[in-house]
Length: 200
Image 1: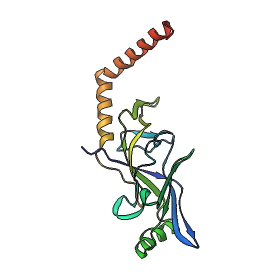
Image 2: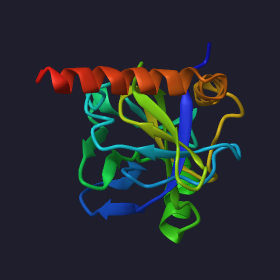
Image 3: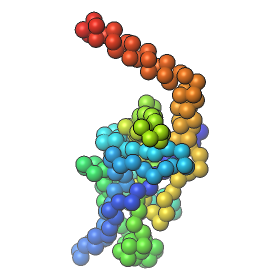
């Protein structure tokens, strides 16, 4: 079962040349509390603060367009630094000093031809919540990532046609339509009322 997901964001993405060393590619792989565009015409997604807390030490790669043939950096090699701030997941790649990377990645990035970032990930078990907002839009909130695979400057947004998000959405819709979701919510509320009455 393929549970790898890819998301793309229009975020700050820039090159930072250093006179005495290699160029750095700096960007945000993800931003917090920002509603995505409609994914597969089905739902919107929000990445919550704290979602990346357990994966910053993963051996993450920095790739161009998620292509493992164009590796730009790697956390374990010290050529990729990851951090989280109030905005989101920030990356700083020490770019390889090769003609291929200068031509394929750095030149178009400097010109503004490449302006989006993306990340590949796996959602943790119980790391997502689905709900319908007041406008009837289905929303998926991701609160915990179990694995961060790569961060990538990208030419185009990359969305897989079918992955665990689609399966998870289908399961949520089935529970909602069958009445199981309402039953579970009512049972939870009843338990909370009992605990409140018992002062627990």
